[in-house]
Image 1 (cartoon, protein in one colour):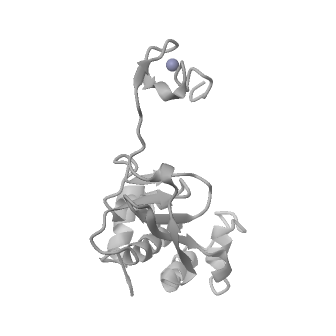
Image 2 (cartoon, helix red, strand yellow; image 1 turned 180 degrees about the vertical axis):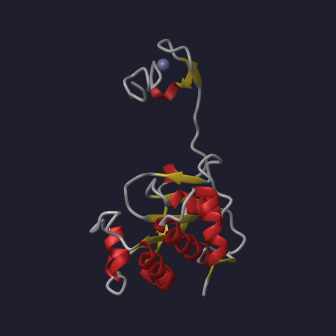
Length: 188
Ligand code: ZN
């Protein structure tokens, strides 16, 4: 059986349970995605990560690499695709790995899960996990990418003001009030 970023599969499953709470299929697939991407980055380069979904995949990156949401080396732009890109942090050159729906013919339970063709209750979880471990990286697609300028480097916050609405500190680039006071509802 293969390894994921130098960890045995059993080790990685333990890391998922510790970090994420339960063995989510997306995190298991995510491990193979992160493994494939890191193997295709030049050794010794500093890289950042862009995640195209907020579900599961960011946790695979946070478990297996030094890149976290909080330290800014992992960026999440939720366009809803199950894809992750690793890129050199100064030039933006890198590789993108996605779960390829065209490669799921031999893995019906992965397809059912990925395309939500079955409800969670109807899914055969053991078979799903077995298919993921059998498929490894064979269900993934990879291509070279160049990240857009805006996503390279630290996203700068700029000046801070105190909001006249709520009195809390906020980035002045958001306008004359904080986004919450401008109508982004978070609480009822
Ligand atoms: Zn405010």
